View 1: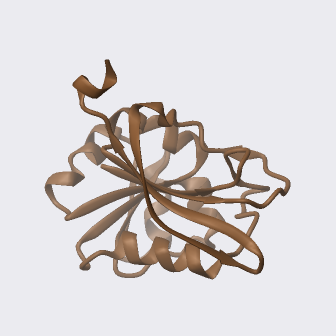
View 2: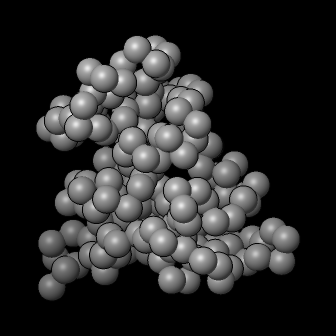
View 3: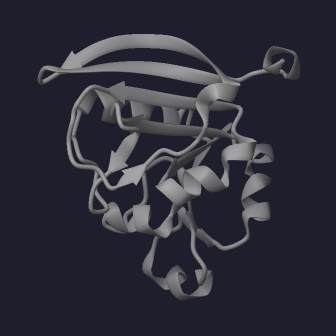
Length: 169
């Protein structure tokens, strides 16, 4: 299982249930990574789904974590599955090429023990945030994928890969 996130220097990822920035390069990276070859899934919380206008991400199976999955089923298309049991979601790696957790704060933390890789866009933009990426990255090796900037906002794209037990010593 993987995660993908964009965060600022304060580990901020959102403000008032929205992204505090709109960076085309980061959105393109997110789309490219989460779509893959067309057999990928994304997992998100219900608040994240609401922040996207309750629309699914195209060419990916969308799994929405909610306490009341039966209530939500009528309102969405075929690519959306509402789920309340995390154990069912942990089995998705056997079905899809790649499975990405895409937010929000509580959902990232919930799946923390299961990440093998985390794709992080680090941006240097001070702005108000009220939602954070609280996953501890100390148990991951960091590798720079690319550096870029957009609208004078520097950004770096990294992949964090889970350290082996030997590396943890």
